[in-house]
Structure formats: C-alpha cells, structure tokens
Length: 327
Image 1 (cartoon, rainbow, N blue to C red):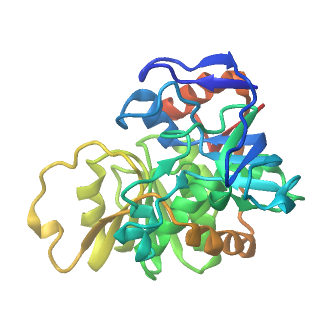
Image 2 (cartoon, one colour):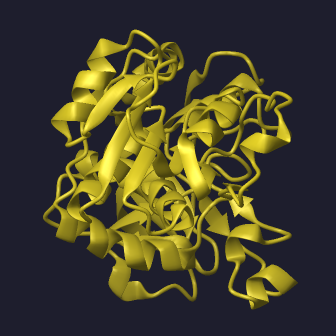
C-alpha cells in the first residue's frame, strides 16, 4: 500500500510503500476512498499533541470499502462502505465506559494518532468503531462528516437549546454546524479571522445572519458560542458576548493558553465547557440529523501524495470548507 507517514513531529510527511496491512481479530480492512484533513491532524503533525505512535499514518475522517475481514468481525460487511472516525477503540471496562462516556475512556486508541489512520490507500480499523455509510453517496463529501461533523454535533449538543449561536473559526466543523443550526431554526453568528472576507461571505452563503472578524461585535447577545479555532484568547471575548446563563463550548482537542480574565465575564451563571473526542452514540444521532438538514460539505480535493500541501493550506487558513485526500 501507499501511505503518507509522520516520522518525527514537526517534519513533513513522507510518502512510503508498505505491505498491505492484515486485519486482526475483530478488525476490518478498508480500501480508502477518501480521507478528510482535520485540524487535529495538524496538531499531531506539528507536535501540539504529545506521544503519537511513530512512525504514524495520520488521518481520522476515513471513508472506504471493506475489502478484508478479520476473525470474529461480521463477514457481511465485506464490500460495504464504512467510515472510521477519531475514536478508534475503548477499553469497555473503565468507569467512564461503563457509565456510557466512552469518549473519556481511560485506555483508548485514536485513529491517526495512536493507531494508523487514513492518509493511505488501505487502513485497518476496529470493526466496532466503524460506521456503515450510504453506498450511493459521494465519499469525498462524506469524509468531513467523520470528525468535523461528529465533533461539531457534540459541540452543538453541549451548547444547549439557545436560539442565537456564535461560531468562532469558520472552517470544516463550523460550516457543517451552521447548516444544522439553520435547519433547526437557530440564528448563526460567524466569527472569522479579522479581515477574512472570503470566510465571512462563505458563512453568509450558508445562512449566517451575521458574519465578521473576531475583533467585531454583533448587535445581539448570544445564547451560546462554540469555539473551533485553537486560540485561547477567543474565550474571554466569547464570554463577553453570551447572555446571563449562556455557555461557551471549546470544541477543539488543542488550544493555546486562555489568558487571565476578570471573574465578571464568567459570573451570572455563564458556563465554560470543553468537548472531548466523541462517542458512537454521537454518530447514531448525527448522520440522520445531517441527512434531514440536507447538510452539504464543501471540499477541496488533493491527491494523497499532496498531503503536506493540504496540511499547509489548512495551517495558513487558505481553505474554505474541508480538505480531502483521495488515493
């Protein structure tokens, strides 16, 4: 198989040839059709997240066709299209797993971080953590749903039922969440990098009632805000914009330090919460919700061997929507 591998954090990925992997007990192998590029991949490659498995094949928004079945896995899945997300395995026995919070598992595996992911022509996955997908859908369009969509959904649930939602960082996750919000009758306020008129126009095209730089203020108070940009200094600004009893959700796995701020920004029962990983239940809820809302992902396609270019465009903020690698 062909793969783009991370040999050392902070270094470009290398194109390598490897033997095709074989699925073990309870596993399946996919012939990868598409793998979206997530900001978490960037954090792994750049060394923001510690202790990745090295050498590593990144990528955790994987869509592919099952072409080999390990012992104990359902043989009827052979030939099916499935998706593989960030959460690659959980122990099933710790207090969090037992309580239904497998996203907080004490002994998890994460696709494209602690087990090989989808920047490759083939990938092996735990069959229990792979989701059956629409066989007639475009695999490129499906790929961003496997993380940007799932984490966006979990973040939106954490935000509560408020009508006015602020989205900070209008990238892959926010462009999906915005469509869900509009379908639910909510008002979307989109905050982008200051001066990023293209992202602001993109947000308006998806139904945002207001779009501007993160240095600007809409005319209304927000019921909740979701921060997808990995910028800690956005937290005090978001708290300033939410009403009493409102909530700010940090939707990323990594964020720069949150600066010191006066307690009055949090007072009046405002809440600041984070989202960690995802659960399989999130997928059961999300995919039908996305279908009902008519969610359409906006993608930029790169050949597999141009993975470093895709990561660079994401790092520089040159993307509108999501980058997707196609072997």
